[in-house]
Image (tube, rainbow, N blue to C red):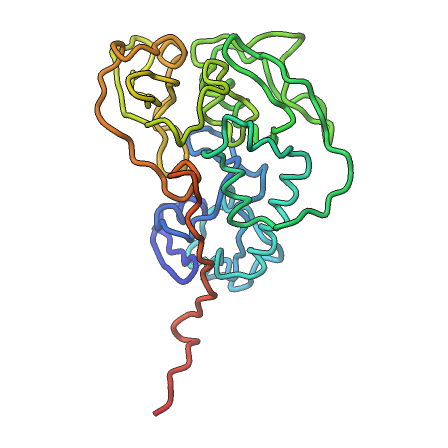
Length: 322
């Protein structure tokens, strides 16, 4: 086991654990935000840079700090490592710049976006973003396209996190979409007009951290804070059949996978459960799901975020003199 200290909290983790995974083991506000990392998708992480942290000591053998901030989702823990996240002013300033960068081409679609209220970028911007923007250039613009019978692609909103590509690579037999071109011209698209039509293609909607991939069967039907998420299950031959039903009264507006406290799917579900089973009789309703109270999904407002002050190590604190 390796010892790591994050924001003055020490824990032990197994070898091969990343800083972000170690922070999630501790939990609370010291966990860095993540827009591209997804624990259930191999190879994810290292794209958005929103999880940057400061390593003030590499290990017990190497007491030097790293020269630059590192991505916590892809940096493995070393024994004796000391990491600063919310206790580092440098990290907090860098995170503001990262949010500003992610919003360079992102349109102000929150009033009409189906992802509003459960959008990771919306939450990240509220907690770490600047109140104004310095960007004056023209934004990239794309036409909306259907990349599947029930999937709408808004490339204007995409932050190129690659999650949907990893889902297609690891869950389906034949991937027909991916990242086209390079650099500032990169975009998500399908190969020569192909459509994403495999049994698990709908999971690209759930893993998307913004409103770039949306459910056409739910578009403009309701805001998420007006519907009640319920844990439901059914007998399914393709997946576990465990899902979340978003209901208004006795009507099911949409079906999604169940997500954990970090916004990641507990299990991937098939398209039959997601798109075809919208009748209450199709499901066994277990009860209401717990709602994360930090987002506007809770009663149409954000909780007031109290910025944590810098915490000094115990040995550096000065005791009051008598």
